[in-house]
Image 1 (cartoon, rainbow, N blue to C red):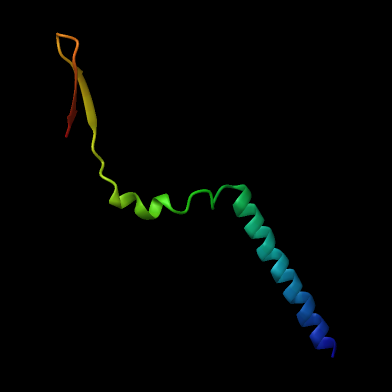
Image 2 (image 1 turned 90 degrees about the vertical axis):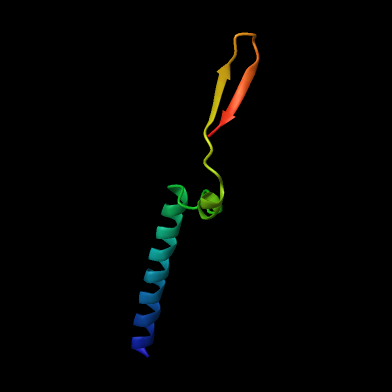
Length: 63
């Protein structure tokens, strides 16, 4: 019976450790944006270059 109390005490300490680690990671911003990194590869990385022509028109070029 005393072994059961020891195991319950150890499990409460381990659960407290996991709770502390979770709260620490939330406060450090680990879970702020979990959607964008997974779909970032799907977005095109097109650089837009804006040039001004002599007659005040703006042309946007995409490479």
